[in-house]
Picture: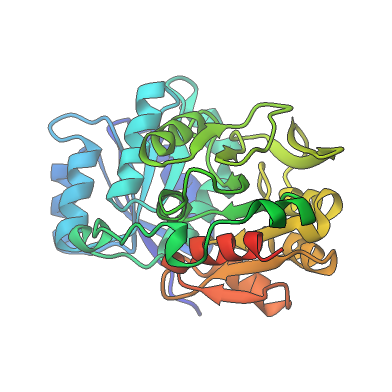
Length: 357
């Protein structure tokens, strides 16, 4: 019998604590070992037994969740899943938590939390399972500054003649657990004239706008939450809005995105498989695919379709730099990947693939 994932729930709401405990204990792979209404009580519980995963509220009395998270990640790192409300302030705070080392977000409305959480049962259990597989590091290591190389360190800028001979390339990227910081690392390394980029990051609704805004302030390129019919342009990255699928489309020489509703695909909306399939259909050999850290297999089949359609390059993040090696590994196992590289090398390989014609 497999060892169960031991979970500590930290939330000031008794209703949320009870509901989360019932949901998580309903999964045979998970066991809630304790609940706490604030970080001080949580610390006492942890002296008795160390959990495998902590679910952590952001706004609590006596000590906020972000302060507690920083203490955990700087002393004895444990995978943390953040529970946050849907307010704009909550979104930005939860994204800061991801920067500090949290591995997943569970969205939590201010009202009707019990019903909402029960409806999200599968997603909540999946988030805890993903966190249990995550590779955690002490906060100083996690925030270590990676060298911000420009494209010149890998390959010269494309010539005008090369652009005349080739159709514009489009980069499509999929990520999940650990992807927020992986995407930041990747996008910060791109020059202002980088090829157009379309991204699906598994993230709750209302968080993607704050996520895109944060990245836009850090990167040379423009980063924005995608809207229907947005053009895919050089120097721009479009991020799929939470709870909506995003497809790459083409009209003549113009690439654009379509934002649409629809069922969960590979248990996700947005789904990486949906984006990658559309890239195979509408971009073909002009597409460059990247699959990053994440749990599950979303994106693997779509990446294989891209490869069969003649994609310029299909890239997977390697295991050593992935928080969870699920999604990249699944794509590798079915033969969808042409290059497996560490996170800091992905930007250079993408630019090379786009400039090689």
